[in-house]
Amino acid sequence: MKKLISTAAIFFFIIGSVNSQVLYDVRGLSMGNTSVANSYELDAFNQNPANIVFQRSNNNSSVYFSIATTFQFLTNSDYLSLNFYNDYFGEYSSGEIKVLTESEKQDILNSASDQKTTFTASAKLFSVIYNHSLLGSFGISLDDRVIADFTPSKDFLDLGLYGNVPNRVYDLSPNKINGYWTRQLNLNYARTLKIKNNKMIESIAVGGSLKPQFGIFFFETSKNTLAIQTSSQNIVQSSGESEFKYSGQSDDIGVESPFGNAGFGLGFDAGVNIEFKKFSGNGKLNIGLAIADIGYIKWTKNNATYYNDGNFIITDITSKEQVDSLLDKIKTTKTTIPEFNTSLPTTIRFGAVYRIYSPGNKKQEGLELGSVSFDYIQGIADKLGGTSKPRFGLGAEFNAGSVVSPRAGVSFGGDENTLVSLGLGIDTGPVMIDLGTNNITSIFNPKGTSNLSAGFNIKYKIN
Image 1 (cartoon, rainbow, N blue to C red):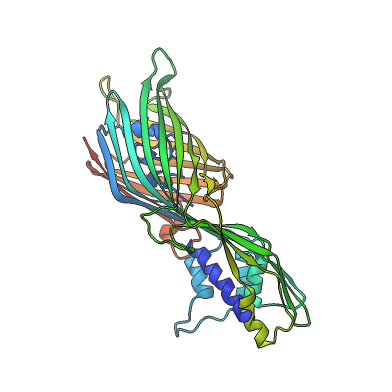
Image 2 (image 1 turned 180 degrees about the horizontal axis):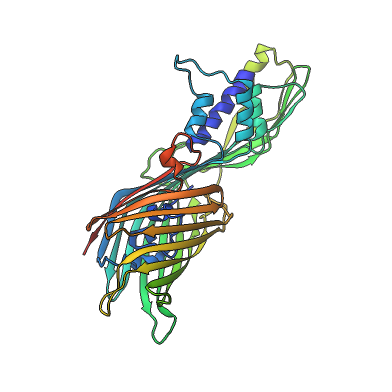
């Protein structure tokens, strides 16, 4: 019994480390996750649809595009790192499985109990923006999101590490595991409105997105009331139940193909960016406001719940026959369910950016030397990996000439720790490259950090 429960606990523990949240903009990722006021062209998709009209001051291109060259991932945990896993669940150099000491078990309990581990990945499969001097800017993008999370309760880990201690009640109800994979097509339009006879406002950019949604995989813990009670007479009694909701292309839980879909829905974004006239030397202020992911996905394919009845009694844990029959007692009942809807992880973003320019002339504005930006991000729905906890970001960018742009920032709040970000932009003319992370320890200590992240982006422009 102890071996069985220990194996199950470690199995689910490992699953949580491989899967979980999502960022689309590599530049914003490296600037404290700020983007609602300071993003440009392709980087503005899913952040502020009004910003696709903007370009850096030394750019005036009619087309921007990328094809399968934008990737980002993020792991978020208070404890889980590659070193943590290798130290406690790896193997000795001889190949033998490690045997945990008492202090190591206590360290796992203190570090991991009731802590959510999240994995998020996103990819921009392709994106294009066309800028027209009279009609405005038109954009289209196809993006994938993969989000998963796992929360192990203290009693769950205690049971797995120490086995069934007599006269104990183990509450397993906080355990949760969730996973989602969605794809969206983003149809974006924006234009700039010139404001005349106004002493403060120079222009206002407005934009909106229509986003058809394609659900590929859905798995969520919908109910869990499981508990296990042990006695000094070798009696183990389990009570409660657990239930998981699933939708996907496969008949059973799994991903059959990344090209099909198990659901369809619609999403909407709307945004505005107000550009104020110069009020401090060569500086300029922009304020942005956007709401993203208003909408839903209707899941329609292979919809089912997986129900586990946790009510059983083993009267003699030393009896091999009773222990062997445990697997027969713990059976999963699959029940087909009707179509169901899930709302998108709606967020509201408000922020500002202050840009500093070199001296220009009457015919041409000076080049952008750098910027400082701030974002406030408020989630509305705790769905599909979203969170209603607010998050704040502060970022800065310095343009060392027209080619290299180092970036840095800090963000805090939400489901994440306080993180210091770092990144680099390279503009070679027709090709632009962005590298970044929202946690600098991902660069200097990738095996030791529990918040591993990286972003990579290549985009092209045509004048």
